[in-house]
Image (tube, rainbow, N blue to C red; front, side, top):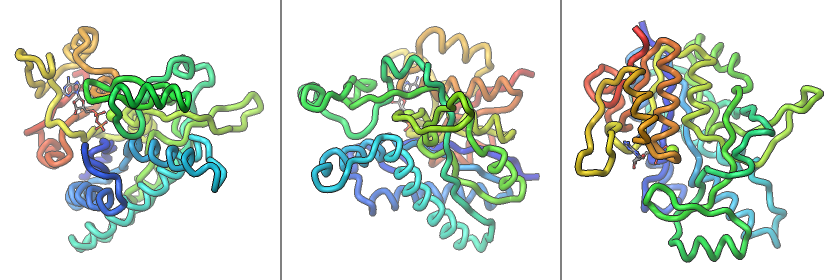
Length: 314
Ligand code: ADP
Ligand code: MG
């Protein structure tokens, strides 16, 4: 019997470091990612795909700001919806095309998803989510002075603009995603963490400018649709402790206790591996397995051979 798997695609599934963000380049990356996922679907699993949008939403926001004298500038929340729309389009088409090559007629659909956050989230006062391209420290500080951006150094890789990244409270429409998934449909959902919305006192929703971390929303999604397996695919083959140091050690299978200990010892950077480990731990706490591995090795990792596996409580 196939499993219901939530696959969270990292940024490199759409755009690799150093590549120019043209449509053609991004589509080719998405096609390669879809090839991997189609292989998993073809084994009889039902996959719900979610993905990040950091570089894309940053670029769309920048286009809006640069062109505001020509076309009215859209707020970040709309840029978020736009990025979810265009990445979702690429993913659905690429998944359909890759499944077609395998003579597999599994239906695929994209659901433009909203994610509820709290207006009181502390991240609105101290933004933490890097978006868009990397800058030198000098360029970043100039952009901050010129445009009022908040800029921060991103995990030793350069400087980036940062925006608020509130904790996702719930994925709106996750029951629909689950129903589609139970019917065997492949759903691309909650892209870029979902469009952030807050609930007003009267129960209505309203969009808010922020970018939700896709690893955190991917966990919520996996929990809410009762997934059997949660896979976070990124650009490293494993999670490590003492990452990048001479005493770096690979993690292959970790218990919840070990994983929590490593988190408290600060082995995972806040803007990158931190949210992945937290998401994986929360999912393992629901009694099911989570895997963090590279996109290329997803299929082997599912078979337990490769990647970092966070084991559920026995
Ligand atoms: P994604 O786009 O997949 O979310 P991120 O860049 O956010 O990717 O996170 C993956 C990055 O996390 C890796 O490329 C690596 O540089 C970084 N990282 C930080 N701490 C660790 C760690 N302890 N083990 C492995 N990778 C780590
Ligand atoms: Mg990330």
